Amino acid sequence: MKSLAEDWVEVYHGNAGVAEMVHARLREHGVRAFVPDRNLRYVDADATGGNVFELRVLVERRHWKRAHYILELDAAAGAMMRDGGEDALEQELREVQRLGDRIIASALFGYLSPLALIMAPRYFKLARALPTRPRRYRTVQAATVLALFLLAGGIALLVLTPW
Image (cartoon, rainbow, N blue to C red; front, side):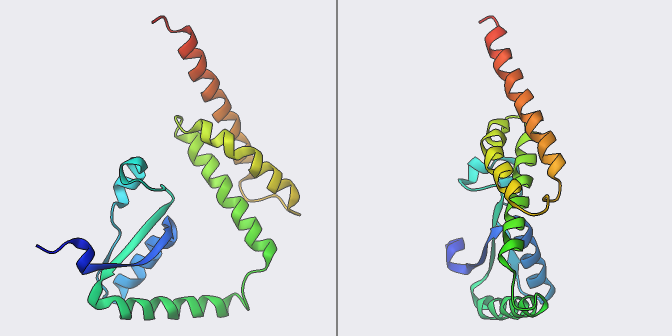
């Protein structure tokens, strides 16, 4: 019996949103592709031993060249639309916004609120250095406060619970 690794090869590994777009683009062109552990990664990232914010896209080995060609064309078109690439400020702003999105998600999951509090100082330091406020700045502030309350509530619950 052949293993999955013999029939499928990875064409993308990274941001979950981009992985979904790559998957859709390849399927649109008739290339058989799939995203392994898509649902499991969102439910329990530890079960797959990976990062909840990253996914992989696999294609059949016989379609690898075609998939690679499609993705190269898309990358070239994207570079032409950006007029020579991103400038450093846009890239830094986007990085800060992604960090803010991670803080919001961590705070909303409750049990990940300590992670939100660990990332928050770096986010606010980077956000202050930018000439404009990142998108959802106030939401990140609120998520940080929520994470603080969730963590304090969890500690109080542990301390006050009679064992």
